Image (tube, rainbow, N blue to C red; front, side):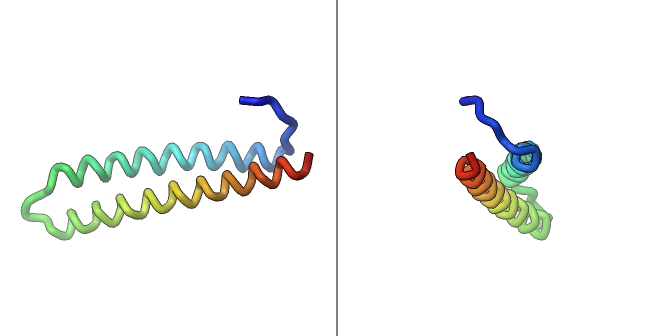
Length: 78
């Protein structure tokens, strides 16, 4: 990665987004594994797992968009 001077606020935001992205990826992977198990008699649990899977990937996309905007704005400040 290229070295660049970044303000403390931006670097904190990038670190927070990186940590939350890892959390969302892990949650999505766990939901995906539970989807593959296909719990037989628990249809409500299956619906919740599918919802959790969709929500985690929405949050991953949202955090990626915020990180992109933050990096673009930090490049303009230079």
